[in-house]
Structure formats: structure tokens, C-alpha cells
Amino acid sequence: MSNNIWVFVQQDEGKLADVSLQLISKATDLAKDYNSKTGSSVVVEAVLLGEKVKDLASTVIQYGAEKVFCVEDARLKFYTPVPYAKVMVDIIKKEEPQIILYGATTTGRDLGPRVASSLKVGLTADCTDLQIGDYESKGETYENILYQIRPAFGGNIVATIVAPEKKPQMATVREGVMKLNDPDSSRKGEIVEIASIVDDMDCLTEIIERVQQEKSVNLTASPIIVAGGMGVGTKEGFDIIADFAKTIGADVAASRAAVDAGFIHKDHQVGQTGVTVRPKLYIACGISGAIQHRAGMDESAKIIAVNNDPDAPIFQIAHYGIVGEISDVIPKLKKAFTAKA
Amino acid sequence: MGLNLVVLVKQVPDTQNITGDAMKEDGTVNRGALPAIFNPEDLYALEAALRIKEEIAGSKVHVITMGPPAAEQVLKESLYRGADTVALITDRKFAGADTLATSYALKCAIEKIGKYDIVICGRQAIDGDTAQVGPQTAEKLGINQITCVENIEQIDEASLIARRSIEGGFEIVKSKYPVLVTMTDEGHTPRTSSAIKVMTYKNAKAGDPEIPMWSIDYIGADVEACGLKGSPTKVKKIESVVLKAEELQMIENTDEGLNNLMHALISDHTLG
Image 1 (tube, rainbow over the protein chains, first blue to last red):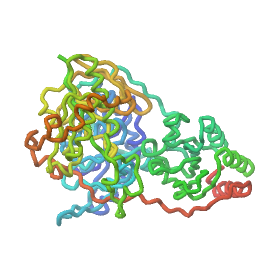
Image 2 (image 1 turned 60 degrees about the horizontal axis):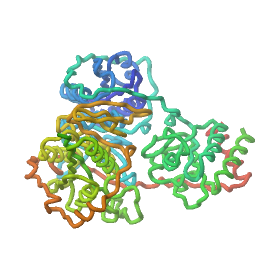
Image 3 (image 1 turned 120 degrees about the horizontal axis):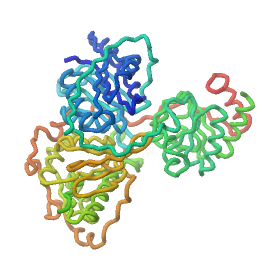
């Protein structure tokens, strides 16, 4: 068995998913850690499926893959579960990697379980951290296996899951939680073409229409974020947030409650069911700080909390706290910034 | 004719309304302190099935759940809303099942029902949020799957057309039967109980003819593939989420306080 660390690289209409490149980056860290602990020389490899994908493989190599297995077939142009799972299971059985990571996207969370069920191996959903470590159970020690760390119970606990006895160990990983390596255009890697085993009989899903738009905002890349919650009060209240954000060069985010209330589009949602962000500054305005929201932003380098409730939980993770009404504090902050900048 | 519809439901602790005593001191969850509810997205799955039954004459809705005898409650609620038959898959040997072992048991139970056209379940349960049991059950049955379905747009005796959500948009997809569909909470609002049906079923208990209990032997499952034994994943450690205690500096809501804050952020290059 190759024992290598794999990433299923997702592409949609010729564009690589951000999370896949984040996972290539994380996989290179895991491989380094595994090799230093075991003295072995496992590498990162990627699997890329689609109609025409070989041109995308060089980008995957720049982020750290040593080898990219490409399977090209017109019937793989768009993701559908049965053909994708069939191809994945076939390559996995031949190459025997020890770890496979998938982005926790609708595609990754549709494909991963199907592959896991077919191979009868474990799969941990929506991980937020991955580590290499030992596991002891019933007098046996399993060395250097994958710790799959994820929130559970609505974000109230964090569980470390292992699958010690069977390989590959598989996980889907949330977008935005793994740091992206800087691409290295001088990196060399191998592109391996694999013949497709898809049969027309496998094509059980017919895609009649597909509409996908770029997100109106990419918060995972934002260095500064101003976020609003229910305390902003109204849709118009968000104009104050947006105006302040524009002034200081920030992007606008929101809590789930504010999105559900119709104050702003879902693309702006940060938290357990939104995006995970780690900006250098996060200004939380009228956000109480429910655990589901904090899960998406508590890695921010600096957090300013503005809330009219001095007991709001958001203050427990903030570096700076301001007690007051949004409609009062934010215009004052804007004025203060304009005066200093 | 008509379609045979199997709905998979789960009774879950209400993790969305966690109260103070729901977490034990060691950081684990005190399930007893949380009310047990019908998994929200599973209600949307049941609603979708009941609507298909109304649209295609002769269709039947079969609801199954896996859990302890107390899970009879979600089956009763399914009967109140219009399910034709229900079954409780219950056996101590199912304890400790991860998603793989759960989907195997569900597959055995679905095959016990016999002929089925569509299996419908919620996209995910709020206690685990894995969204894995649907696709894994489809794989075990050897059938197609459509996940994250917002709405079933068209349906006839041979195929269905569904709208599923994807990042930044949607897909309209068509599949013949058999197929497994997982529903999100964006579809038709689940109906409430029918008063007449509540009268009919309110005294039913697990083990009564209305709510049969199916054991591991009854569904013909291999004990080695069930419960803890059939689960490749193990929980190594559970921790409560600790708030990263930051050195909180309160800023006075005055022009001076806010000016000083902005000055500090600009001078350390966080801003500007």
C-alpha cells in the first residue's frame, strides 16, 4: 500500500474549489508531521475528476501535491454520486492511501459517505482540525493515526474521532479553517492519467439545469470584517454597518439570526452553518455571541464587540468591548477612524 | 399502482435550545436534560412523502426509525400526520452505531419492508450534523441518491425531478426509481397532526400492532456489522467548547475612548 495522503480535488465547471487547495496545504503539513514521527516518506496526492481537468493539475501541484490522478470523461463533467463514487473507489482500492480528505461541500458530503460505505471504512463529517497522534484502546496502541476533530451537538462540544483499524481514514473538512500554502510555481509533480471506468448504466442522475453564481462576497479572504447581528435591528440598520465597513476597508458579515431576519443575504453568514473566517480584525456589532457564531470567527486575530448588553457572551472572546447602541457607537467609530487615518 | 415511499426519521435531543444543565461538568452532554424532538429536517421529509401520496393515488408512506423504545414518539407523530405504517428498529446490539453501522441497519429494515420506490430522509440530524446516513444508506441499497433537496418539483410513476441546493445556486435533477432523497428545511412547511388520527393512535405503544418493534434478527442484519462492532469510527475524546479567555479591555463609549481605540488599531497596522 502506498500509505500516501490524498485529497479529493473538487472542480466546478473548470474552477478548483478553494477548500480543495486548503486541504492540499493541510495535507502537506500532515505528511511532514507523519514523516518526522515515523521516518517514512509519504507524500500528498490528489484525485481530480471531470471532463477536461489535466490543465488544472499543475495548480494542484503548486500547492503541494506530488502526484495528481486525473480521470477525464464527459460523464464526469458535473458531479453526480454514482459515477464519481465508482471511480474513486476503484482508484482507492488500487493505490491504498492511508488518509483521504474531502471538502465539506455539498459535493464532498455527498461523495464521501458513498465511498466510505462502499469501502466499509470510517468517515468523519465537517472537521475543523486534523492532527496525527496515537490512540490507545483495550491494551492496543495505534500509532500515528489521524485525529479528526469536529464540533458536535450543535457546536456545544468538540469531539476527536479516530478510525484506528481500517484504512483509508477519511474526513470531510470545512471550508476556510485550513490555511492556504503560498503556491510555488517551480514545484514539479507527476500527472497520472487514469482511464475512466464509468458506464452509461451508472449515470442515474440527469442534470436538467444548473445555476451557480460566485458568492457576492468571499469572507474567507477578508482581512477586516464588520459583522452585524440582531442588535442591528433592521435592514436599514445594516446600511450603517455597510457604510462603516466601506470606510475602514472591510467586508460585511452577519450572524445567522440577522440573515434569517432578512437583513442581509446568506452569502454574508459567518458561523457553524455559514463560513469560517480568520481575519486580522473582526468587529461584531449587535451579535450576542451564540456558540454557533463564535465557531466561525473565534480564530480572528483581534475581536471588537459592540453590544448594548454588557453580559452578552461575545464579550468573553473579545479583545475590546464597547457597551452601547449600534446606531450610536458605529457612527462615532467611523468618525474616529476618519479623524485618525 | 402508486409508489412505495419509505421515510427515515430520528428522535434527537434538542441541541438548538441548549440550556444550562445540559452540559455535565466533565464536558459531556447530559442527554436526559434535553427534550427529545422529531429531527426537524425529517419532518420535511415526511411532508414531502405525504404530498407524493396525495398526488399519486395508491401510494403508501412507511416510516421507520432506529432507536430505543422511547423513540416510539416520533413514529406516533408520523401516524398523526398521515403515515400508513411505521416500524421501530430497536435492539441493544445497535447501541454505539456510527453512520456506517446505522445505514447498514436501515438498509436491512428497508429491504424488510419489501418493494420501495423512493426513500426519503432529512439531510442531517441536529445531534450529529453529519449528513452521512442518507448517502450511506443509498450506497448500501445500491441505489441512486439526491441530497440537499429543497423541493420535489415534479413526480410521476416512473421518475422525479428535484431542486437541490448547491453552493451559490441550485441544480434541477431527474432520477428514475429507486432513489434516495435527502430533504433540507427549505421545502413545504410540515403539516400539523390530524385530530382524528391523534385520537386513533394516542394510546399506541411500541410493541403494539400499530408500532411494531423490529429486532436485529427480524430484519436479518449481521450482528458483526451492527452497533459498536460495525462502527469503524471511535470517539477518542470529547471536550466542551471552552471560551478562549481573552484579556478583555472595555472601551468607554465616548469620543475619547473610541478615538484612542482607532488610534491603537491604526498604529499597529490592524487598520488603515
